[in-house]
Image 1 (cartoon, helix red, strand yellow):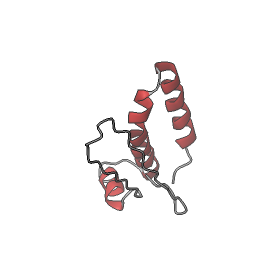
Image 2 (tube, one colour):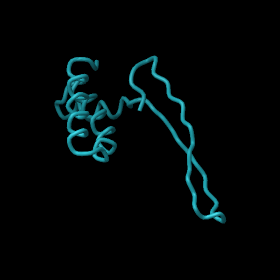
Image 3 (cartoon, rainbow, N blue to C red):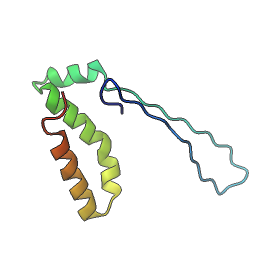
Length: 88
């Protein structure tokens, strides 16, 4: 997920395979938040800032869920504070 006009990302493939006969491939993609996604939120009365915060939070939530409970909760809270009033 790219946020902002100057955002960029580099992907570095890493695949750990224990089967020497396996044939594997790696693919990654990045994209900006689409206007259609923002339109969906706005049609439901959710302003731009809250829509961006919801999409960013949803994107990160899977990673946060893998963290130990206390650390995951703290990271989630810090992200919420960082996003508050900063997107848009």
